Length: 217
Length: 420
Image (cartoon, rainbow over all chains, first blue to last red; front, side, top):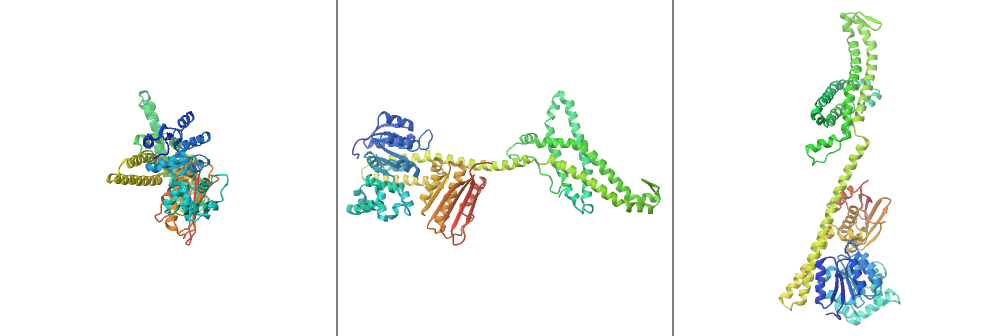
């Protein structure tokens, strides 16, 4: 159950999915303040009265290309406090990298299929609302497949990569320990190794920075 | 071989060409007479009948008459032009009715040209042919028969008078070869000239040849394009219709899971949820094979990166394109890469694969290289065969270089623009 009641603006052009999402959010005790069908209206309602979280589809009318994504970037620029959860029908690097350009504020990138796992979806939403980063496991899996050969991640052991992948999905150490069936102390050790091997910027939260390194390759 | 080439040959006089020339010239007589008679007949008929409109209705028939003349004359020109004359008429779409076909032919410029040729044939060509060929045949005939004629009668030949067979033979052997040579060349020149005239007026013009070629290319392109549009339509339907509905279904099932108490009912709903998700995954896979959405939305580069990411083999992608390319070209390139990577994963036993893409002048060039065992071919039941046809229609090529022992290199080239 949600830590708090969120005020949410929903942007999705398919009526069916919009209603489905609204009923899930409603059921979870959140307030769907507006649900809109295109990016322009989305920007208008957000500017009028900023919500806690915006959930938006990538593709929306009129162009059906990446209107939702551009609206998300505009919202992020004007209202860094609003958590943004982007839903996409497929994995595309281009979407991901444009989302991750900003390193502050809650951001999420999920495949639409994920919405059906209601509990997980609501958990992701909470994390985004709390300023966390959530990336779809499928996206993470594909990125993992690509990056095993080169880049800064080459130095990590398979176990450390697994831990990093779970970090990227937004899990805290305790949850990672549960999933990998190891102690939390072991996870902390892996995380320490990861930070050391990736030579992270000191200016950023190291956890966020590690995840970004991971996602950007 | 043409009449002109035959004339240039040293063996002209002992070849069949002088006789072909006679045949060509003499055969112009009946054809020419019939043509001019029909032409004037038809013109007169339509003039006489013009007050009652039927005459005017005959006018559209004249170009069709031209088509008939053209066909006959191209056939006859086979005497002088061994390769014949190609028809200048455009290929007609098969779906037309007889009436539409006649209209199509009537409007062609080639039909009017043939009609004009018919007029020239009927008024100038056949009388001229008859005069020259007739005169030279007569002189030759008389010379050949001189011994016979002189035997029975006194025969005046220019300054000489032939009184008997001996003098006739003397004349034949002295002047026969000269007459034969001179007349054969004259007749040969005239026949070759007439055949050239026929070829110029009845053959295809340069632009007509090019038009036929362009039409052929365009119709193939249209086919590829229509195919592509149809795939996109199916994809959109699956994506925006079916897929959304299944996502909606999983959402409802997910909500139901939250509400149901533990027990058989909840177990079944969870099972149904898993099945709906499996259906979604299958659908996603199918859509990808038809026309991937990422290709429509983000273009070739992003789509190829996505394929490479999905490949079980570590794959490096380096593609730089100036912008979006026409949809059929993007699709063809995408499926070549997709199929190639699938083949590499299946057969090559490679450890690494590299996809390079760039635009070189007006050509899109994509190479896919692996470090596997080699020995790959385009044929042999690989999915690349169909893609070669598809590329071919776009003016592109696919070359496989795969020596036994490897490495395998596929190189795809395709013009960046549709049409010429």
